[in-house]
Length: 316
Image 1 (spheres, rainbow, N blue to C red):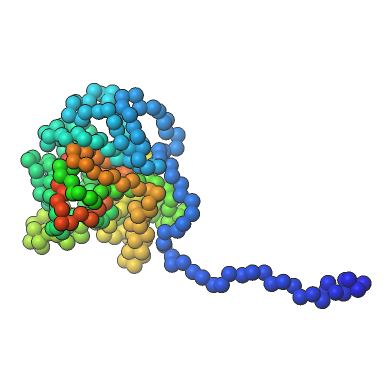
Image 2 (cartoon, helix red, strand yellow):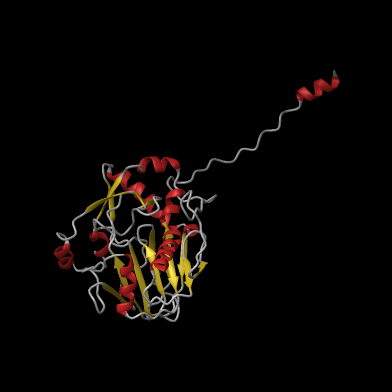
């Protein structure tokens, strides 16, 4: 009786409660990342005709033992293509290809694209980036030429001259970026379409008169916010800071807020690979499945690169 009375009169210990807090909506959060390199059900086979060395968890692999100046056999072309689908960007060290050989290698994947908005090398299909202290088309996450009805399938980039330090390029895996979106965001963008326009990406470095001369040739186009890869069937986020202007059918404020969230996905380090160049290196990337970012940290030194792009298909 005495014990029961004493127990009843003891005040209960209050449960610890955190102070009120909030995190701004639509941010990037710490926690588990789903890092799936290939689609579900994909047969992961060995590579027989070269050595492949992964550079990151889901994206980026160095290919060793090949001379890209030599025409690939059908079997080798198929194996390189499989590596491209599985790793999204491939690196080949010390190739030192002539411009003609670089174009010939790229043509194994289709017709080559021209881009009248950029400086060219020794052929119309070769875009030449010759950079030092001059402001340039760099340091922004983007997918190439999404302002076209048929954006590029991929690109083959060679560094002709590298600075003593800096000048790396980064790529982001946009299939993994899509996988890790919150389900409510996936639901909001399911079936959504976005407008892409060349003007925002080029206006910073191109005179207005030159922009106006091309606006009839490159009118705004619509693409799905989430596209299907035409070879793997995988769903991929397909909007980017340089060229995506708004979501079709959304109020402007909602469109801007949602696009800011989607643009941020390329910034997640777990979705990325970073490549440090040496002169003569080649990078071959799947433009359908990636974004990339040229790091502009080498001024006043010079960096010279030449890119050949391969015509693509209409996103669906």
